[in-house]
Length: 425
Image 1: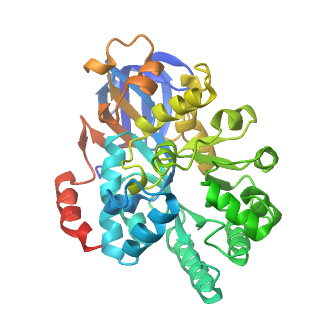
Image 2: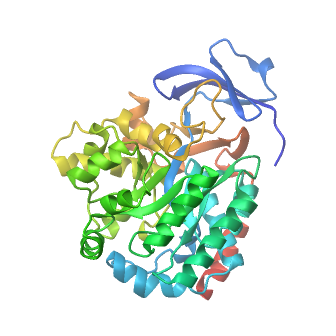
């Protein structure tokens, strides 16, 4: 990657907490100044921001990026059938090289659609870290632990997590941090869940877990433990402000209180929940209760893409139709979920365009038919824009996409490699 020390985005429409016309100066990895008095002499690289909307990079709070390899596998199935009959048998054939290629392909897709940070849970995670290093993105990476209530398996899973922490935490110019990632309460023994939390606390790491995704999961856990999923996790000490719970589709009122009290962040995955017919998470209710909610794509075979723009639109529309109230989840709240709330969940100094924040910035083209006219930039971003409108992506002060062209990944090469290899699964 070419070393840059300063970038000026000139005369642009900025969306962060407010919408304003201004210019943005990036020095090294940080937003140094936002003002109208900046000029061309202030930076080495000048980006013309007129006819562009400049905003924080999108933050994907729940993904399994190497599952790009499984795009189109197990469509139109329920979660358990999809996992047990389609996904797990193929994942048994994964190896280092496949995960590296699948991750790199995902990063090409994410950068091109405006995502700068993602929170991932999967296998062979050092290969995903290698792809993050080369791509220039930011990521929180967790090894997805599944012991299926087997003691020996539990020990080896924890060893894998410890190895990932040792080798990858705070690497890649601090763009990679590691989370502890037990898969779910129905695939992990109680001991693995407790030990996962101990490991996360010891290293002050996030704990990333699937919770309350389907009605079946809720019923099964209730039958096995006498408690609902969040109650169960709370009773064994897993929940706190470092916990990121993916899905949270079926919380009871009591669980809502637990989530609020323990300051758990929820990662909402609208496309995946719709495709697997898991249900509609009560996002409006979470937000009314002061719960921090981010947005995720989940894996590609339950989505089937990584476009956070479509997730923002679906997030808003689902809540409106589910509550029969067009006024819930206004654009500002949806935008915040995909940016600021995501940064809060992952504990990173990003998610808004402010002086002193990390320079994770995207520019969206407005000179396309479906973005014309721009009466309200925020409305256009949430309801009109497509991921393909992203023109420029800056992460950590480095340009990763310029004039819609990837700078850190050879797009055609990775497409060809994945086409050759994906069917090995």
